[in-house]
Amino acid sequence: MGFTGWPAEALEFFEGLEADNTKTYWQANRALYDTQVKAPMDALLAELAGEYGPSRVFRPYRDVRFSADKTPYKTNIAASFESGGYIELSASGLGAGSGYWHMASDQLARFRESVADDVTGGELVGTLKTLQGKGIEAIAIDSLKTAPRGYPKDHPRIDLLRRKGLAAWRQWPVEPWLGTAKAKDQVVAFLRATEPVRAWLDTQVGPSSIEYER
Image 1 (cartoon, rainbow, N blue to C red):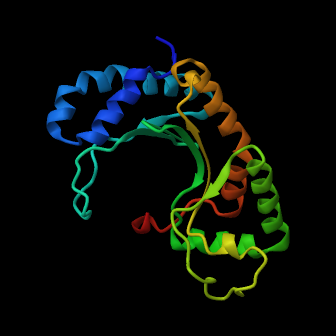
Image 2: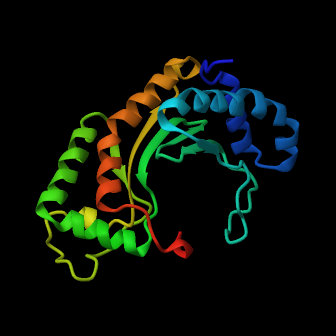
């Protein structure tokens, strides 16, 4: 069965989970999750596999070992592609991202060198401005409060230099198209629009060789 969007029941499932994040609610509504939430995600990923390759859906269970919040379940369903790209559905709507959300120390070093360079840094700024005009923002997992060591505080691209990661992100509120195949068109348009960011990161930063940091 092809992707036809997420029905209203999918959003209602997450609204209920936000109100009652318990094993009792989860078990009582597991069939709803499987058929109305995960099945559409699986169908969407299958249709995108030809262009974006293998993907995986994240587990619905939260890792609460080191968290003060002990609620057991995530209030969204999310998936990522090996080639880059992220999709998320929650009661708030649909989200999509692309980039390097977390950078290890060797990646950060290369990222900052490239941002500081007037040519490569200027290229990135131009790309991000173009995306901003399309409603796509640049986000980071975290940022330093001041300039990283070795860089001036008044650097023209200090905002980017302080970041510990970089991803393009777009969030769509709940709209009627979310329950139709047009939801796929929105995701594809986002992934194609953000390819320059991913290409810049792949070229200037690349993968980490410090596996234990990841």
